[in-house]
Length: 173
Image (tube, rainbow, N blue to C red):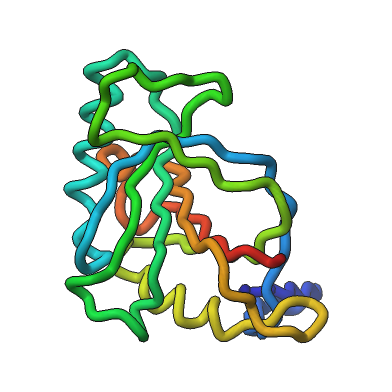
């Protein structure tokens, strides 16, 4: 988490950025999404996002925020064995058509989550995750193992890479 401190005087102004080792914690409401599985290196999940957004468009599903759920720790699992889900947020009452083998409903439970906001190209996310996971909770405890996910706040097809906003989350319970 970056904290900017501004100093103003009639002679000069200066911006100082300080790195904090304490993660911010937010309370999230339950998030419902439709998702497809991806197996393999996390940076190749884009094709799974293409599948879920194409499916949603074809089935008239209101387009929501993209959400990636990452099930494995890439420091402990071989890249080809990493499991993740590419998803899209849907209304709480959304139901899948009965015979849909590839797409499934997932729910991210309500609760406290440690968070960090990454602004910039998706290629910077691995370094952002590494810094984020080294932080502690406000009580000094390390981030616990639990659900890890990203929420993509804007559309990569219409947003310049340096303006992409990605929320990084780890369960804090």
